[in-house]
Amino acid sequence: MNDRVLSFLGLCRRAKKLVIGAEVTEQSIVEARSQLVLHADDASENSLKRVRKAAAEHGVTVMRAGRSKDEMSAALGRLCAVLSVEDKGFALKLEEMLGHEQRGEFDDKI
Image (cartoon, rainbow, N blue to C red; front, side, top):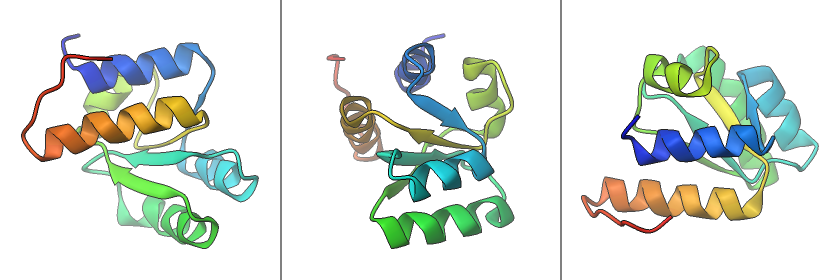
């Protein structure tokens, strides 16, 4: 796997700082554990509606991952369209990585 964001998400999962699924992500937000919410490009609006509402109410950032459900699922080993990062350090690094990607910049540091 050469995708740095997906590799980093795998690291987050191994560290048990990742919650996968719309319902558990919403619960993570409400319980103030979520630091960042990511969703696949092709995640359904129905899945995202409640998550976005909860995130807005609790001040949690929601970002598009720039990957499909299939790509994220393959990297994480289970079906994944919406996920929550529950560690501030991991969340900040992912925001930085995705921000560089969206601006067309590449950063070799992890």
